[in-house]
Image 1 (tube, helix red, strand yellow):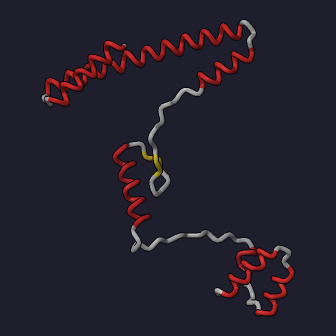
Image 2 (cartoon, helix red, strand yellow; image 1 turned 90 degrees about the horizontal axis):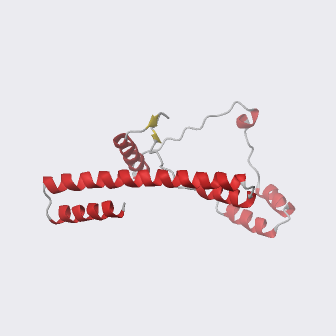
Image 3 (cartoon, helix red, strand yellow; image 1 turned 180 degrees about the horizontal axis):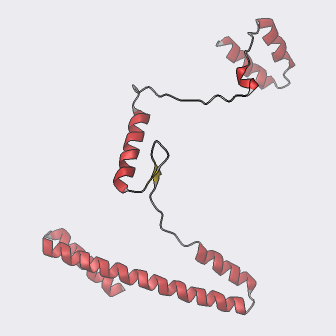
Length: 162
């Protein structure tokens, strides 16, 4: 594996110094070969670890068994790139995802664009209530009934700013 990586790195250096099609093809082939070797070695390592964990379980060493299982299961996993469009459909194509993010940030950061926020009104009787206006005296009575003085100060500032 180390030989393959060193050959790949040498081909990369050669490709960077003199970028020709032959050097680029040579680098890509060596990179593919090195990645294949790394994946194979990783699978072999995981299989060895699973055998060791099974052996630990057979020996009834419970603490070490669960510790090893936890360590093995916390291996990094490949994440899939998906996104939803405006209609809620899932996008998996990289170009479509990038276009969606571009449109999202353009809409978000454009100060001139009018944002329409639709709020669906529930048919609860609470949403249909009309609130009556309070007088200054009524509000003062409500504020006096609050027990926390910080609430009182906040309410007074809010009322003054109206």
